Length: 255
Image (cartoon, rainbow, N blue to C red; front, side, top):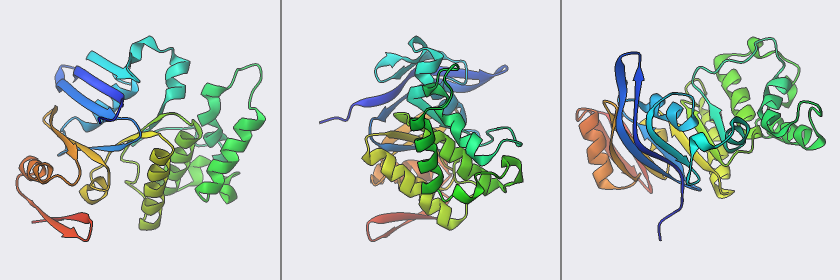
């Protein structure tokens, strides 16, 4: 029985200026699953993720929960889709607490401000990600990896059904990469959908499904353990990878 789809890209094309970065891309993202988008540099991974988030103009159509993304109001979309970008900006003078509270804005009305539930969600996000002791520190005082942890907490605080993340562990040390994996697994156990872009293929192969891109096109969508997917990865990375199975996991090493 096939899994229902949380997101679909149908014949999506996009440009940076005059340069076409996506060519009639079709991709499906199953609800309640973690799907990772992979491929060489310049393959169009981040562009596809931005189109899925409604952050980049495109031709074609994106469906969210079976409805055109453009049919959602900005507030509805913000409640359904949470975004964590590779180079996200937030006010460096804001406290960690206030940055995480930004994730609750879609749930608030300007005349009421933060509710008791908003404050409870933020406190839980700070606690779960070991950020409580930083609550009064400014975002600008944190290292790159620390900053990314705070921005992840902001995205989680939205409590959206779909979480889109571009290189979320790029600056993270090993323990916090493990924390990120646990966050993803917890989100999918609760029925959430996670779509990430990762350069680290060993981390990407922990996902349930992979979307492989090359030169602005999707060349394969498959479960992470499928041999055909490994052969596809070999091709797009010019046969410079070696796959090793260690118990129930696959490891990738440079040739």
